[in-house]
Image (cartoon, rainbow, N blue to C red; front, top):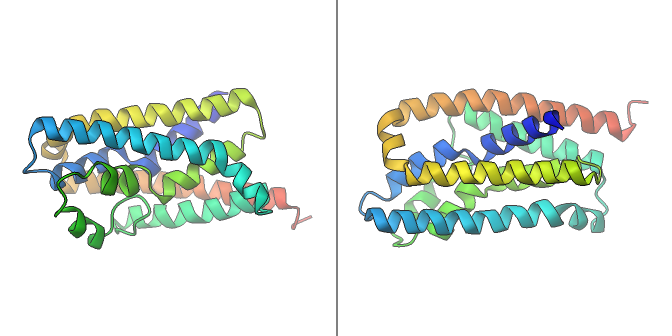
Length: 209
């Protein structure tokens, strides 16, 4: 149980990136009032929670309809997370866990950033969506393990909301360099988790027997 919680929390924390999201959010909202920033942060977290819970609860069912096996999901999900982790290590904006440059430019002209780009792709991005499906599928239908994964997802989203509400202070504290250092450290951790997912997927597939 503790192992499931640690892996789920770490994976969601890295793929959602509460601190990174807060730094980007602060950079996108310098002209907004504190009340407007708070409102957008709350709305974005609610929308992102709905999106990620939908992927967590319905993703495996959708994959079964498509005939995708659990080993294939683990392998593909591991590769996706590995690519995202590599981008994090090299501080590249790929759209996996952050908005791309074109998305950021488009967002700068918007009055309300809560749905785009804050809720998605910043909070509920491809990496977080894939992680939600992958971790829930890895519970093998165990209700207690599934509840643990959901609890860790909600905990990370709660931390994300707290970081968004303190976004300006976090930006001043870390700066660009500090945020990138943290991203690189988390990227290395995500790469290790991703490779383990790939190993598990290949081992479970039976192709090496």
